[in-house]
Length: 383
Image (cartoon, rainbow, N blue to C red; front, side, top):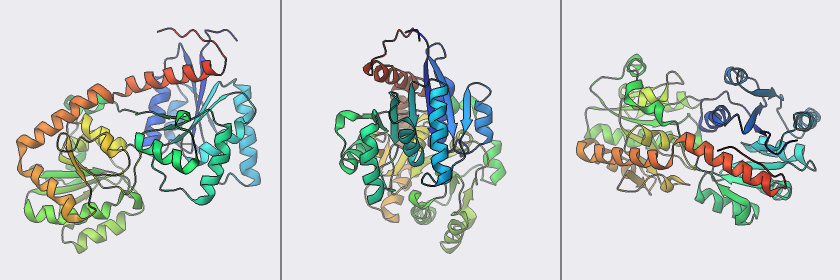
């Protein structure tokens, strides 16, 4: 193979079906890679409309998988190994736990660059998974995390040396949040009042996102700010439970659920304050989206959140998990338009400097090149 031939990079994850951070990130990386220097592949464990769209522009494959440790699962590992060999893949980069396991097992002994990812702070760790990853890491070239905080967690939990872990800030597509592209119809379709001061959160309805805390704080905000409305942008099985809680709190008529309908930038355009109340995070894509939309942020101080939110400058970090502690900065921001605007502007300025998606993809490409060169293949990548 010629030294200047494109690097073949395979990105593997459970699915790209969901409209969530990792799924969107992998799709964006694959479509934005420099095709003169890279040949991207995307492999998933299930098919989806988004994967079909990607297949129009790049190589894709599906390896249906429910459980890795089953006869069918091991066959899928073997099939993926054959895919790596048949397509002469240079780099296999996995996202999500099952994909990390399949990646390493399939590539053992193949002299490929094997990269796995830890994109949160390990709330899913079990003793068994820790032991498994300690073994798999022996056959892994690099582990990527999305925050310095996650790097520390992974190093401690998996016994990895710091030089084997690389922090990659993923970034977001800033163009999506330009005011010229907003569509007011999405929020209007939910019945959101046009004059409301909207406080929102972008998060799928899952326990780790602790949306109950958001609603309990919303009740206090509603008492202090009669014009406030509350928007939950996402979807998930917890929606009925969250609706019941809003009813119990007496704010059901002021709470709106997107339930997976509409585009995030269109909803952000209607918001005054953006929130995150998760129990665990790596580096939340939602906060980068908030910053790109010029919104002040109120977020629980978990994981890598403090690497995004400059407390008192672009938003507020909440260190006590109580409705009162979470509601207080929201109320302050709703009452002070000058403060709200200034914080949002500073967040947008930082997003433009540090979290542009195209720049992030270029950084990842450079990382890939360096990893392959370290394995002994000399490359000439055009700038």
